[in-house]
Image 1 (cartoon, one colour):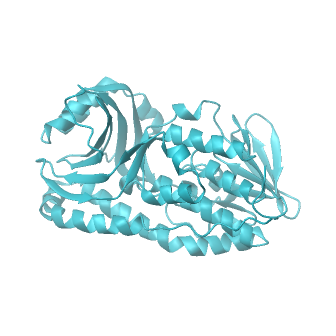
Image 2: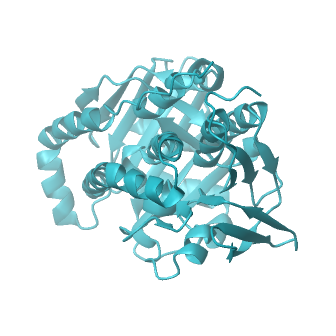
Amino acid sequence: MTNENSTPNRRVAVVGAGITGPLLSLCLARLGFEVDLYEAYLRRAQDVGSFLNLAPNGRAVLERLGLADRILERGTVAHSITFANHKGRQLARNPERTTNIMRGELSAALREAATDGGVKLHTAKRLVTLDKSGEHGWRLGFEDGTRAEADIVLGCDGVNSTTRHLLLPHAPRPTYTQVVGSGGRSETGAAELPVDGRFHMVFGLRGFFGYQVVSPGVVWWFENHQETHERSFAELAETDDAWWLAALARRHRPDPAVVRRILNASTGPVGRWPVHEVPPLDTWHRGSAAVLGDAAHAVAPHLGAGAALGMEDAYELALALHRHPAAPQAFTAFEESRRARVAAMAKQARQTGAVMTPDRWITRVIRDLMLPTAIKHGVRKGTEAYSYRPSPWPVRAD
């Protein structure tokens, strides 16, 4: 492995090998750090999760690292996003180019790039303890009884982060947004729905539906709706797929027929999840350990921004650790540079969610009256959100 500068190796433990973790690990390895990446699960990354719509800011990070073509070829490009109301009338169009890709495929591609770059990947390593070791280091304990040591620990383990709980025990816990999401894959007749290169969003009367025809006869879809009572991942997973799909079809009966057609043609497993946010933390670090991505600031998924924000975090934090001689100094500078952007994205996600899944009929009536204006405003704000440009990568030292 050829490092891109002469920074002395420092041992870094990255916890969580979803999307943020592998990308962070790769960046750090390229900058001369010795990186171990720990993942709680043994299963293949490709088998995890539904699809996500990766925004241009996420692609910008991959392009800066020279990875965009290699990784995003596993997805399907959407050349625009259209928005329609429950009567099927188009309200607005966002011309931004996004990529729909299976979350597991994106994770697997990033893990592959990381290990090719010299990162050591350890699976079936569920973190259970995190203790100081010496003056600056850390000792990590895993569920299988093994231990590891590192100079720097970085938690990329998602909204229910164990790293956050162990590192910042007084930090606020994730909050339920009273929205449940689900998604899957449908197979329709090849001539029924055109492959038009668009991601379609429908503001239904009782829920929000999005879909893209990714190839002739193959549709990826997701749905969000209000549920006041919180159900866990386990409870939702126990729900029968056929029952769930039938309930969604009934929920969307007043909406364009294409929604029910896609739901009725769903094949394979349906993913379901409660939607959570992580309230603002006073700090994202303690000493030479920190959390980032969803572990630090999970925002509601209504902008499709979570993965891209985590990728931004990974890239910028790696550069901060490269620039500053001490990890706490790097973490402080990183937080200062990221807080305003994260707060703005969280606010926009909440506002978008309120429009997508209104909880009362009067809210829905007002929403429908305001939709054309609200959507055009949202498209403009979305363009601003996507305008992130990665900081320059260090020039390779000869």
